Amino acid sequence: RPPGASGGMELPEDLVERIAETCVRAGGLKEWCRSWRGTCRRFSSLRWFAEVARGGVPLDVVPSDRCPTVQLGVSRARSATEDAVARAAATRRALSRIAGRSDDDDDDDEGGDALGTGPTVLVTPGVHRENVRLTRTCALIGWGSRGSAVIEGSGWEPALAFAGLGMSERGTGDTMGWSIGDTGERSVACNLSIRSRNRAQAFAVSVVNGAPKFVRCDLRGGLLVLGWKTSPAALACVVRDGRGSGVKVTDHGEVRLEGCVVERCGTHGLLLERGGRAVLAGRTVVRDNDAEAVLHTPDTRGVALEGEGVDLGPPAIVRVGVRKYDSDDEEGDSGHVSVVVRPNVRRLRVGAETLEHLHGRAPDYAWLKRGGFVFDGGDEDYDEEETGSDYDDEDDDEGVSAVCLALRSEPREPKPPENRTARRL
Image 1 (tube, rainbow, N blue to C red):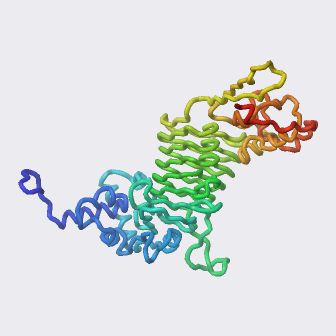
Image 2 (cartoon, rainbow, N blue to C red; image 1 turned 45 degrees about the vertical axis):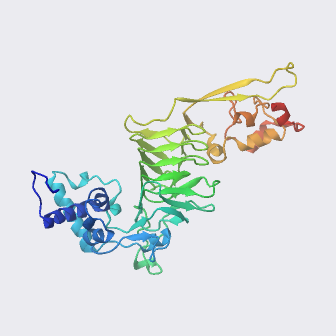
Image 3 (cartoon, rainbow, N blue to C red; image 1 turned 180 degrees about the horizontal axis):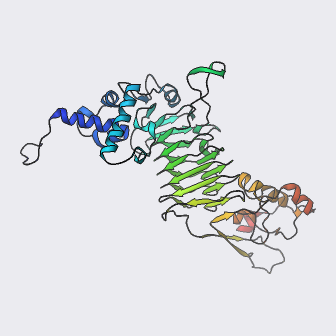
């Protein structure tokens, strides 16, 4: 109680410490950071937390002498002692019974490992230039304000990959004395900024196995999800500035976005193909992308919406383009304006999905047009560069292969190159 304050009851120091220990054992790292770390100096150190919640096993901090890189931190991170894990579980059950809740009602957005008893890596503020693979289940947590801990990948690998490539402790299996077990399927990434230095790399994060969780992470680049049993979840995350799609789900994978923002990506906000599934919940917003908010192939069911807070932007996108100048037009006629209106959520027709989501809108079609082929019903004078599109509403050749187009077309003499700069001036 502050000096001179009146009223109230001052609790004994040992009782306050017992309350703090009970709360931290039950709530783990999240409860300690949110409530007790700023209460007094006695509870503020990582050493105190390790003694109370982890049985004396310290948290691994990157960079440090033991873990100079994030990848080494993932490999060397240690779990709490078995007694500490059992004590934490018993404390949570006891508090749940007191509160009249079942064990299944615990609100743990970060997952079990973020409680601080599993392998936990604290990434300090700064730019960590490396490509990280999660080869075991652990909690990868940015230690600082949001956006201060950055993982920046290089080359053509994603900055953070959940690839299912690890192995468990030595056992009696058929793999040279090793038993394949935990390979990072239940990992957690929290409070991290993840990006690729190579701006031609479309995806900053790749998930090909397991059900990892992303909590309050910022991705500068796309999120790639693929695989039958792959089902990551993202809570309060931001995905922006991807070269291609913001979130791509393929090969029967599934993703859940809750309270997330997907914006300013080079093509679609969400791309679902080959049985991919997506669930949007909370106040998830998909906005300001160069193409539709959602594009999905005929073999998918599209996006499932939970709640009324999901915002996919306006119901339609409008593109305005200019057709090439025709020499037969009267002098002074600068061409024809074309307006294309498309829904913001689009389902590709059967047979047109083979190239649309892989290489853009019919690249072979655009290449053959430049080579001088004539297309029945097509518009050979449509200015692809000025409109940003190589299709129009009436004749959509998206996804058609070069072979099919060649069979439908007759070659002609190629047009001489024109001075585009002079024409535009």
